Image (cartoon, rainbow over all chains, first blue to last red; front, side, top):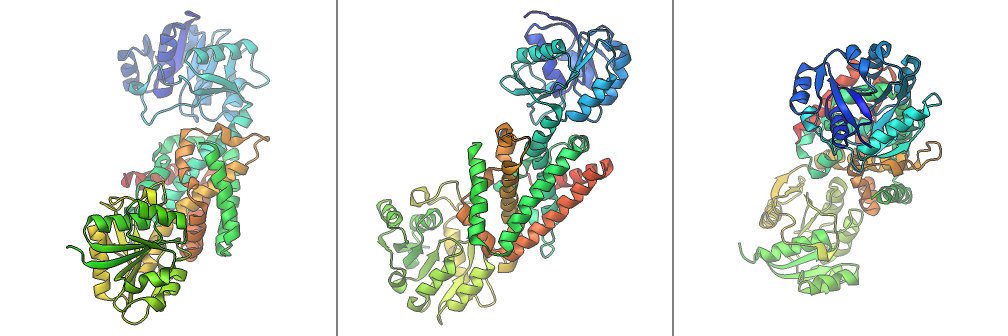
Length: 287
Length: 287
């Protein structure tokens, strides 16, 4: 496939949006890329790096001639962005996103689409510890999974186009119902982050005879809590946007922890052996 | 210092005991080393590897001529081992251990020491993912911290001897009151393990429309839960032996998690930002 898209608009030219733009360019899938961002610095960097051909802070105007719009902004802003551009989308335009929460975004964005335009929710499972346009690469998504979350309202052609583009970026495309996606990721991603933040919070504020407990931590603690160094704003937004599923996952975790607590309280050696062995088997199974 | 000890007895010739024996040999601190273990296979391996000069399953007999006895067995067995050897300890003998729980062990072992013999609790902060005599090296403790936990009953000479030996092994020796040690390690080591096991348990048993949720996990989840692949028997024993401090740490963690849960439930964006930022600062502070 060569130059299937005449004009791609990427809203948010950071790691996720910039890498998508670079991948599309490298695959020869687009003729023109317009970069849109609220940060002028990011835009100028993206232009200088050749991520896009044109830059603007005016999303509404920029999408007027686009066949595909990729929204790569914080998950709390996706619907706002969709609302801003919706009146200006040309007929047949496909809007897709890269956010890690899907149900609210899909519901919100679908409702905003004018006739003839389609929203396709997407979540590429890729990232690095770096961010911003300078971190963007054409290979970020290669061999990574990208989950598309069609609903009953998603047009087949729009879904196929999104799948084609992600395939050209090198991603393995799979499909999930939006709510299912959110419940899965609440368990395997959002819950672990919540737990890591809570753990560091607890240990950091623990009072053991007035000592700085954290000064005794070694490599194991550092590795275990690395994800608590993630961007607070991003996890605030994800927590709010996937509130219901995350609360449910936290409650499931609390039930497991309370079960373990009771075994320790009872010095139940057989029960502890069983609990730890079951967990170890789960863990070893994902190696 | 050369050959200060005529005869060192090491009970438990696995990674911890075997490495201590090797380090003492390499430092020229001992003339003879007897290896004691309940496993004949371990003993024969330790002898073949040159970890010790003599091997036996009979701890009582083996300690009769020892100046120093190092107990490196699972923490639930340390007091039993001390009880078995106590009647046979020669006057002036120093008994020390390498267990990661101290208060119960120090109390139990001190009470068993015959007149003229001293127990010194120790906890070298070292280990690898491997175990057994073959994993033992003379360099395991080099540059690592070793915490000695003297009580009011610990003789100064015995404490100094233990510190000298660990120093010869290359460890940085520091001192803590046994209960303080247990509360610190409940926070920074035992709690994270309990949380990791509970997390994997919860995610592994989570029912999201009947899917195997773990099949969606990626590198982040694997790194975060690596410590849940630790030996279940060891963590069963540590949980039981440090029960009180660990329960207290779990309760502190649960309080932090409940605080976070409430912020999510209320979609309190400012509160979530603050919570995550505080945790991130703690985490970044230990980098």
